[in-house]
Image (tube, rainbow over all chains, first blue to last red; front, side):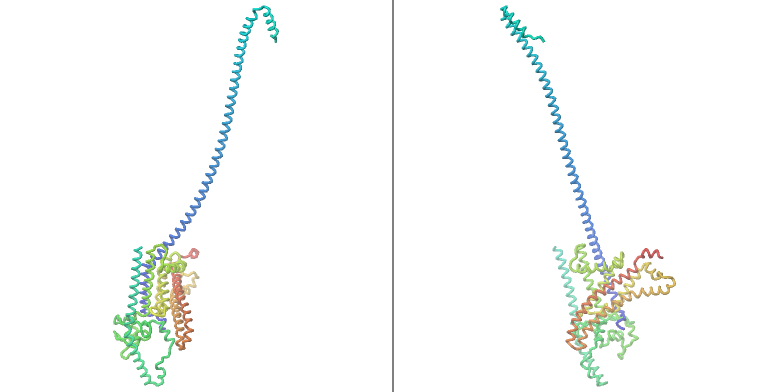
Length: 164
Length: 386
C-alpha cells in the first residue's frame, strides 16, 4: 500500500520543482524559442512566396520580352516591306517621270529640230535661190552678150521648166 | 570573431566551474560519510551480534541463518523502487540527505545520518525512528507511537526530491543554453544542442499541441513542453543505475499525482461554455440526465486519474522488471544465471528507454487532448441541434 500512498513531502517538493521549472522555462526558454521558431517559419514562408512571385514575374517578364521582340520583329518586317514598297514606288515613279521628261524633251527636241530644219531649209532655199539668181545673173551677163546664145539659153530653160 | 570566441571561452569557463562545484560537493559528501559509514558498520555488526545473542537465548535453531542472510528479492525490489532518506552510492557509502519534519512542536531539520539506516533513534522534539523509510515517533520504550506519528509531516529532501532538483537544474541548463542559442542566432540555422532539441520542440508543437488544441495551441505550449521534457528527463535519469540516477521519481504516485492535478486544473479552469454544457446538459433525452450527469462528472476526475496511474504504473513496472532480472543472479546465486540475465537486462533497459519517451509523449498528448476538449468551440452542426 505504501507504493500507492502519495507522501506529503514529495507532493510538496515536486509541485515546487515543477512550478519553478515551468515559470523559469516559460519566461526564458519556451516563449523566446517558440517565438523565434515561428518567426523563422514565417520568414521561410515569405521567402518561398517571394521566390514564387519572383518566378512568376520573371515568367511574365519573359513573355513580355518575347511579345515585345515579336512585335519589334513584326514592326521591322513591316517597315522593311513598306520601305521596299516605297522604294519601288519611288523608283517606278522616277522611272516614269524620267521617261516622261525624256519623252517630253525628245519631243521638244524633235520639234525644235523640225523647226530648225524647216528654218534651215527655208534659209537654204532662199540662199540657193539667191545664189541661183546671182549665178544666173552672172551667166546671163556673160552669155547675153551674144544674141544667139541668149536664145539657146532661153530655149534650153524653157525646155527644163515643166508646168505642172 | 574575437567577440564570439570570448563568449565561447566564458561559456566554457562557466561550465567547467559548475562541473567542478558539483563534483567537489559530491566528493565532500562522500568523504564526510566515510567515518559515519565505518561507525555504521561497527554499530550494525554490534546490532547483529545483539540480535544473535537474544536469538540464541530464545531459540537455538535460529543459529543456522547467522552470517548468511537469505536473499529476499521482493524486499530488495520494493526498497529500490520506493523513496529513501539516504542515497546509496556504492558498498557502504551513501549520501545522508537532510530530514525536514514538521510536527505540532514546529519545524525540525537534521541529517538522515542520525537514523543510521533505521538502526538508531533521533531525539528532537519527539524521538524519531526510521521504519521502512517512514519517520515514526517512538516512546521511551522504543515502541512506535502511531497516534503521534500521524502528526509528523515529512518534508525531507529524499532521494526522489533530490533527483527532482537535479532534473530541474539539468533541464534549466539545457533549455537556457538552447534559448541562448535562439537569442544569439535569431532566425538563423540552429547549431549544437539547439539543433538537437529543436526537432523535439517542433514535434511537441506539431504532433501534440496543434492537432489537439487547434488555434489555441500557443497558450498551452509552455505547459506541454515543460511536462513533456520534465517527465522524459526524469524517466531517463531514473534508468541510470548509479548516482545521480536510479530514483523512481515518475514511478512515484505523489509526483504523477501532482502532474495529473496540474493537467486537471488547467483543463477545468480553461473549460468553456461548450465543455461545461457537455457535462451538465448532455445531448441525450431528459430522462437520462440523472444517469448522464453523474457519469460526466466522474469523467472529469477519471481522466487525470488515469494519467496519474498510467505514468506511475508504467515506470514502476519498468523498474521492477529490470530489478527482477538483476535479482535473478542473486536468487540462484549463480554467475551463469547472471550471464544469461545481463543481455536480457540490456534488452529490457533499451525498451525502457523507449517507454521513457513514450510515457512522456502519452502524458503530454493526453493532457493536450483533455485541454483541447475543454477549449474547443462547438461545431456549427451541433449548435443548430440545440
